[in-house]
View 1 (cartoon, one colour):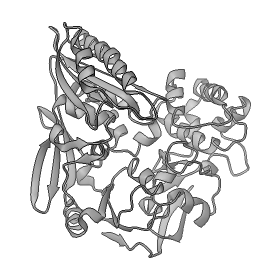
View 2 (cartoon, each protein chain N blue to C red; view 1 turned 60 degrees about the horizontal axis):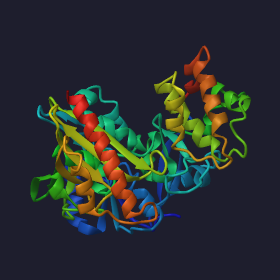
View 3 (cartoon, helix red, strand yellow; view 1 turned 45 degrees about the horizontal axis):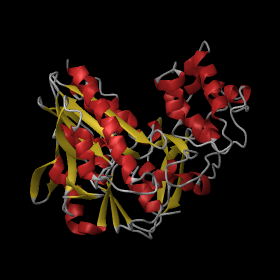
View 4 (cartoon, rainbow over the protein chains, first blue to last red; view 1 turned 90 degrees about the vertical axis):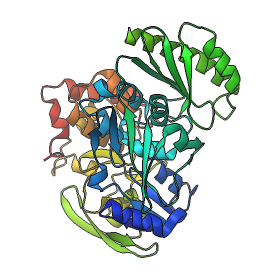
Length: 271
Length: 173
């Protein structure tokens, strides 16, 4: 299908983008890579009054090493980050998650911050941001605020972004001296995950395990890697949900099996 | 700042296969429709119109992307390459196309233009991919004739030939 009509604005500066957002409020949608937004437009799931195209804003097309965090600007594509020479060293969990994000062709256009803004419950980059304890930088004419991942993503496709705010960057903490691992199950490689898991652990077994696809947003819990009952107990507690792709019971099984495997792999990597 | 109202038709100029062209479009016009209907280059095929099937894949400034997930106005001023750019002016197939012919890598041919453009980009970055890497890139395309084995063989043939970079020749000046 084709999108319904909308106004189009391509600001030349971040300030112009913020002025447009203040003018249009929730009538506006921000367009960066368009790999989630344009399908929704084509399927007429959304009918925005105006699209604000930030994809050419050079000020947002920047990867910054801030020392303890890496800041990814809102126009940085997933493949640009994947090709960043320091990715594996600085952000090994993101490096492990990115190959699961869509396909080569969609990663060429899709942005890191766009994935986070879209807030699909089983999406890989929001999960990685949550497990790492990262933050989202929001700017508006009123000022700037930095929200923790867990405060930013509230529920399925729902975030704390105010209508006049622009996500200008996401900040991923650099993890040192720990092991990481990522895995997921999808019907087809590159499709939305049914369940995705990410783990960070030290060599003694203290782990953080994150899961996507069990609730409306990614969830993170501290897990003792030496306690085999911890993950099954968490899965029972979360319950999961049923949809076209999987039953709640399958989701719990996937969390148990994938969760155990990624925690063990993260501990192995740390040792 | 570029601002266009919803029912306003504006002239959009871009480079298509080395030629500077322009036509009018509303903001909501997709790049795939602009290429086919406004510019008349019908080599690019449109399947699902929501980014899943990959048949509309073109090069935008040398990078493979879905033309159904790109607005025509977003491509303003960009360099667009479609399947029409691959063969020589006399119709001689380029090495990637020839390998597709050699390996029966197409049956109905609907998905082929997108797959050729994806691998034109990918082989320019990684001229000697493994079979796994080829399949990974191919996972972004659907072939309903189920011709994947032939497509993988075709790309492997190009990748193992003595001049693998020729797959992208002429597309990355």
